Image 1 (cartoon, one colour):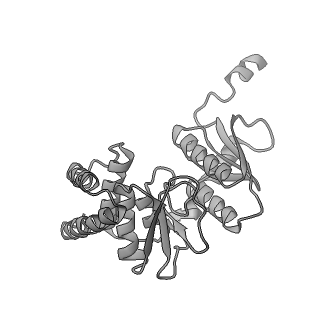
Image 2 (cartoon, one colour):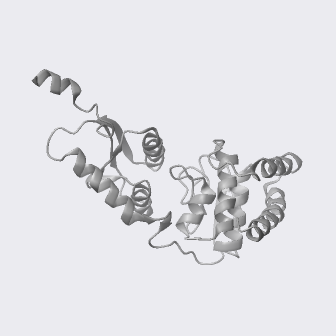
Image 3 (cartoon, helix red, strand yellow):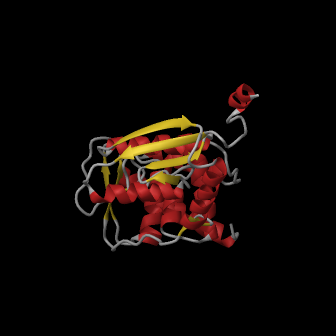
Length: 259
């Protein structure tokens, strides 16, 4: 009987766990804040100060793997493993911790304390902009920082200057989080509760992530228009300029249709 129990331990769904153990360098200071906020947003429960847990699902594995890469790119270290709880805390207690973490960290996808930025910041992103970066730049200029300046840099190896904010790039302050594209991350982090913007985020997500999650009827047409912009204009500034007109019109249309 004991052998049977041992063999069946962890067979029940949800009783296998992904455990992230990380160590961060003392500098830069923002890294600890960024990692903590990312862990809150994906709903990970803290077992210890640097040990976090999620159910062993494909979505959680993707979330943790992305975070591991960011931590290592910033000079920290992280270990990700799959485990079964033996003693000290029960599966039910961890499930309750995760549920509580998700309830308190976000409400309907909106952070408890929305981000705010001083106008006129420099926003940095990868060169060769495409749909998510073009749309995110439009969102920043229209709804977050109307005096924003944009800088386009190589995807790797760029050392940000003081005061710069990076988006849609590795180690960026605003980038993909869990299943969200960068546009959707900005909506969440700045608490932009607008049905038309939410609908636009769903369109951008399906084009950028290529997963047809939302399946909005406008998606194919917007994807074709963005491809046209990218094919016809080599310079990022030109792509951004054309994208502004596209997303201004699309936003107006979505507002009129009430998304």
